[in-house]
Image (cartoon, rainbow, N blue to C red; front, side):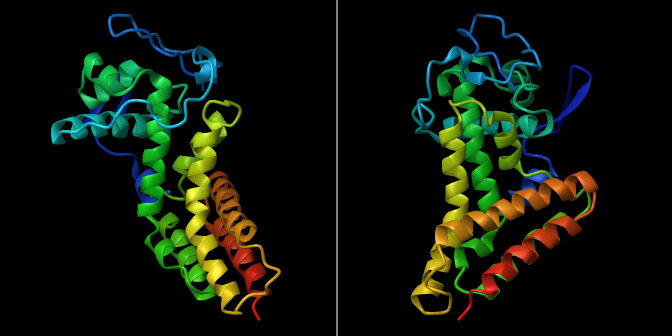
Length: 258
């Protein structure tokens, strides 16, 4: 699949933009039945949950059992993830997603109850991309490993087009006040932190870090430093703030080494 021009803008089809792939780094109107017209939401509306009473947790529809069904669902989620990364949740309509994924309304509603279900699937997909782009996370067993993980992230953002926005961080910034999505976002960030937390816990158990170190808090600090560094680097158009914040976070851990 290539690019499609929708409403005067080019939509990248088939995968997230390079920023998503590298890191992989409003409001929506819940739509009605398939025969109803899907309207473009106002950019001032940021609560997807206005038309859903409360969070349902994971996406409610069962995953497809056939390879063709899985490909169709993946095409819808990938198109939505790409467009929400580029234009935000508020700036992405279901009509846009259908056009970009070259699927029909009946297919979309077969896999997703409404736009909120699709957003939850996008959160899960962006988490998959973040973890896949950071393979060193699966092998954190020393402070040198954390240093190497941080250095790899900085190198990723030094590529053409960087520094990049975080696909998860961008969703969190837009949906942070929507109670329907906070649990899924919180779980995604916790999943990102877990390999760091587990590695730090092993270091403490081996006596390599001060026993007073809280591994969960330290892991959360590393991810928070990464998020803040990416934001400032993106604004500055320079990767140095990201490098500085990660270096400071790792240096703070090294001061706890025994």
